[in-house]
Image (cartoon, rainbow, N blue to C red):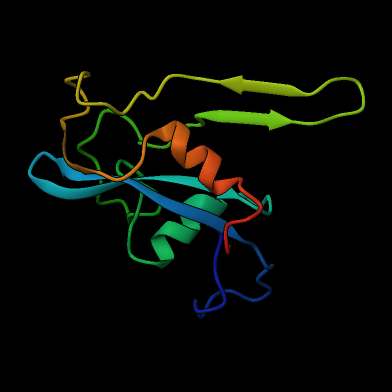
Length: 132
């Protein structure tokens, strides 16, 4: 399990940074939940999971970082919407569908408020003019 400097057991924490943007607010099985879009600025193991746990918003279905209490969802609600990998040979840009929608009954997700679409959020998180 990775750690942050606030944890007593963390001997040598390494700096890491993640951008977070709220896309939707709603409910999963009557429990309040928020759909966010995350952009890791650094690349640490379990970085996104650790950062969300640290602010008190564990990823739905994250058994490990919920202290083994989140066992109801059929999967962890963590998904790479888009991956971009620039290289000298070619620029790789892969985009996928959002699997966490109301249309999939397994999600048990009910939207109460939409602030941004996933596409808008991606553009905002990668906009150099934003004050991140």
